[in-house]
Image 1 (cartoon, rainbow, N blue to C red):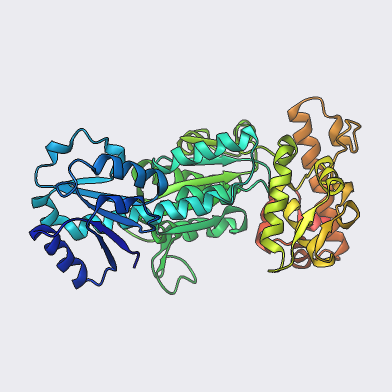
Image 2 (image 1 turned 180 degrees about the horizontal axis):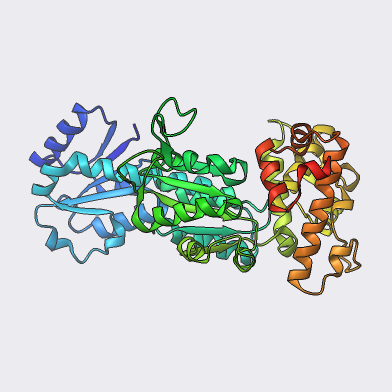
Length: 442
C-alpha cells in the first residue's frame, strides 16, 4: 500500500480517521504542523485538516502541490464553505466532516486509482521520446484523448510507434486487449472478435468468449484495422453504434462498454475509394484522429531516440555514448523502417561493440533500404509524381518482394512467413489483399 501523510491536530475527527486507516493497515505519517509540508514528502496521498491550519493551508498546500504534482490531496473541514477562497487546484477532493465520516474509504480508494493512473500515464508517456514539434503536439493530443471515451484512429507507417500510443491512451483502464487484424484468418474474424456458442458451427465444441467481451470495461486495440475484411467491418460498425455484441449462434445480444483504439499503416481514404474499407466505419473510428509522422520527417528526434535505446539495451554498468560522426550517420539515413529500424540498429550495435564511444563505423545500417537524403532517387518509387502513383509502385514492389521470398522457399508459405517474421495466416491475408494467387506464384 502507498503511504499517507496526514496533516492534523489531535481532535475527535483525526482520531476517527486514524482508527479507520489503522483497521485497514494503511501506513500513515502524522504531522501536527503545517510547516512539515515544506519537507520532501513522497506520499501518494495527503489528508489535510483545513480547520487545524486555517491561516496556513493555502500557502502550505501550494508548496506541496508545486513540489509533488502527482500527490493526491483530500482536504476536509467542519464547514468547507469557509475555505472556498482556497484555489481548487490545490486539492483533489474537499469534504465536510460529515461526508468524510461516511465516505472516507471510498474517496481514498478513488484517489488511489487516479494516482496509479497518473503514474502509469507518465511511465508510458516517457516512451514517447523526441523534442520535435510533431512529437510535442502528439503528446498533447494523447493527454487530451485519455480524458475522453471516443474512438481513436492512429495512422502512420509501420514502425512509428502506434502500439505505444495506444497503450498510453489506455493507461486508465485495467483491461487492454490487442487484436492484430492482419493475423486472423478471414473465416474466423467474427468468432475471434465476438465469440460463439457451443455447436454454432462445425468444430465449435465449447462456448468461446470473444475479444470484445474479454475487453469489456476496458480498451481494445484493433491493430492493422485496414486489413479487416468487409463482412467483419459491418459487424464492428454495429458494435460501435449499439454497444452490443452477438456471439455466433446466440439468440440475444450482450451489452459491452469498450474504448476502441484502432491503428493502420494504410491510407484509409484511398482504401475507401477502392471499396476496401467502409466509409461509415471510418468516420465512427476517426472521432479522435492521430497521424504519426515518419522518422525521416523529424530527424531532430533521432539523437533522443538513439540515446533512449542505448539506455534500454546497454548492460548495467557499461556506458555507451554516440560520437558526433555516429550521430551524423544516423541522421543521414532515411529510416524506411522508422523507429523500429533505429531500435534494431542500436540493439545490434551494442551487441558487437565494447563499452565507450560508439563511432560511425560501429553502426551497421542497411543503406540499401533507404532513399538518399540528398534528393537523388535511389529507386523507381522515388520518381513517383503523385501519391496514387507512389502507392501503386509501392504495392508492385511489395508484390515482387513477396513473390521472390516465396520462390526462395520453394513455394512454402509457412517457411516464407517464418523468414519474414510473420504469422502464416497474416502472409496469406496480405497476398490476398495484393491480389496474388499462391498457386500462380508456385
